[in-house]
Structure formats: structure tokens, C-alpha cells
Image (tube, rainbow, N blue to C red; front, side):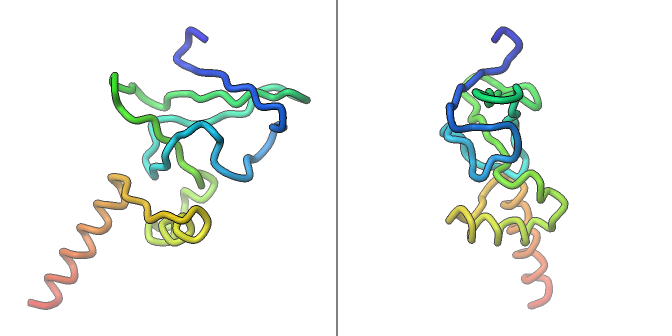
Length: 110
């Protein structure tokens, strides 16, 4: 599109909340570098992928599968992702949580 966005046309998509991650082949991150927006009223609507920040060449594009639940604690978000999408999130934010928990457990043992 010339503005750093890509447009994907999907005949089944209407404006509003997506019921599942877009069929764009993008992985989840709790700290995503992209977001999907639905543009256009009526049919067909457009799913537009927009970078949230500068993306380096070769860097993986990621989206937040449950961005409407960003207010939850990371451990709760991970439980939901495991339950609803079948994976344990290992994004940088969740890995940092794992390290913090491990450090706290080590300190309790000593």
C-alpha cells in the first residue's frame, strides 16, 4: 500500500472482532510488532496488517491473539493461550516472567 501496510481481502470477514487469529500465518506475541485492523463497512471488509513499531528486515512479524485481554496478568494470558490456542507462549515478555519465577523460587530455597 506504500504506507507500511499490507491488505488481505477475505470474503467471509465482516467488520468487528475476529473470532480467531487471522489466517495470515503470523505468530502470537504478548509484545507484538504488528496489529490487524478491520477496515471498511459492509462486504468485503479488509484485514490490514500494520506495524506498531519499526520492523527490521528479516524480523518475524507478530500479533497479539488476545489483545482485548492485555490487562490480564501474564500468567493468566498464558493459561488462556494454552487453553484456547494450544500453545505455551514463549514470547520475550513470557520468558522474562519464567526467569523471574525461577529466580524467586531459587531465593525461597536458600
